[in-house]
Image 1 (tube, one colour):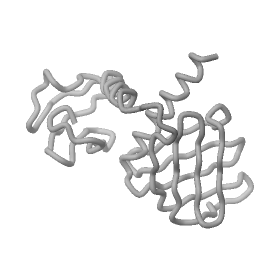
Image 2 (image 1 turned 90 degrees about the vertical axis):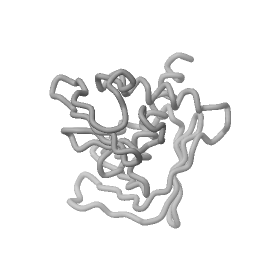
Image 3 (image 1 turned 30 degrees about the vertical axis):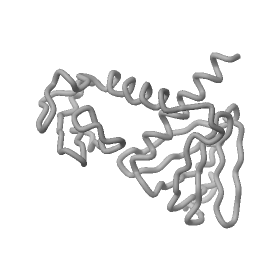
Length: 169
């Protein structure tokens, strides 16, 4: 939060954003700008558009990344797989997702997924509900995170690592 400095406390409902720590609120407009600030922060210290906000978040994560092997570990409440021909997700509970400088690793009681980042398929995230979805052909694997705000961090870090990979090739 640009007002109180708390990490991963900003959430949105599609119409506004707010900080769960200090109560800062602002309106998300259809043109991509952030307006009508309320709370403990003045407009001058708050990004005025979504693109600037995303850049601040990515720059922050980039500054925290070191040459450590594991950048972070996230707790997963549920992992689910939806095969294209099935109508329902099938899954397991209580796993762990890791993002390293070159790998995506998921482990639970019944399976381990260990993929080089270069082959990680399309990814999307639902920041409001806190899940990450991977698309492999017509199949979808969804990871519901224990902390919904971790979805933002995961996507930002994955984008940074993918950018590094592209710049190295």
